Length: 400
Image (cartoon, rainbow, N blue to C red; front, side):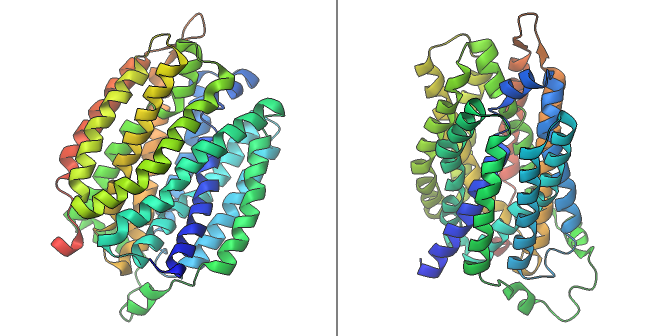
C-alpha cells in the first residue's frame, strides 16, 4: 500500500469517525433523552429513524447525479452540510428542533457513506478491497472506544447538547483535511463514454435490468432490517431490564470497539485471501448467538453483559466487512457512485423501517421495563439467517 493510499484511508477514517459517532451517540443516550423529554419508545425510535429516513431519501435522489462530478467535490459539499446539521443538533432547544436538526444532518449524511465506499472501490482492486474497507471501518471501532464514552461523559457531566457540539467542531477540522489531502478523484469521468451522463435516470434503469445488482440491494436491505431492529434499544433494555448502570453504558462500546479494532483488519485480510462469501456466512451464523443473548437477557453481572456485547461487536462487524466488498463489486466504476448511493439510501431507509418497526413492537411496562424485546430479537435473527441465502447469489462483476 503506497503512502498516498494510506493517507487517503486515514482521511476517510477521520471522516467516518465523526460521521459514525454522530449517528451512534443517539442510541446510548436513549435513557437520557427519554427521561429529559419524557419520550415513549415510539418517540425515541422516531428521533433515530428521522436521520435514517431523510438520509435514505436524499441518498436516493442524489444517486441520479452521483457519477457526474469528481468524488472529492461531492464528499466536501455533503460533509460540510452534515457538520452544519450536527452543530444544529447541539444547539436544538426542544424535541421538535432536535428532530429537524437530525433530519438536516441526515439529508447530507446520506450522501457521505456511498461516496466513501465509491472512493475505496475506485482506488483499490477487488482483491485488495476488503482489507482497505476494514481500515476505513475501524473508525467505527475507534468511535466506540473513544467517541461514545467521551460523548456519554460530556452528556452526563454537562448536557446532552455537548456531544453534538464537539463532533461538529471536529468536523470542521476534517473539512480542512479533505480539502488538503483528498485528490480530485475523477477517473470515472474520464472513462465515461461520450454522452454517458445525458440520462440521469440511467442508474435506476441499469439496476432494474441487472438481477445481480438487485440481489446485492436485497442483501443490504435484509441485513439492515435484522441489525437495526435491535440496535437502538440495546442501551434502554440494559438499563431498564438488565439493571446495567446508565453511567456504565460507555463500557459496552469501549470493550466492543476495542475488540473490533483488532478483529476488523484480520477479517478484511482473511476475506481477501479466502473469499468474501465464506467469511460472510461464518460471521452471519455466529452473530445469531449474541443477538439472542442480548434480546433475552435477564438481570446479569457486568462481566456477562460486556462479554455478550463483545461477541456482538466482533461478529456483526465481521459480517459487515465482506458485505460491503461484495456489494461494491457488482457494478462498473462508471456507474459505481450512483449504485452505491442507492445502496446506501436503501440501507438507511431499512434502518429507519427497522428502528421504527421495533419501536411499535416494544412497549414500556408498568415499572419502566421494555416489553417484547425478545420478539424483536427473533425477527432480527430470521432476517440475518435469510441474508445467508441471498448472499450466495451475489457475484462480482468480474465473475459474470
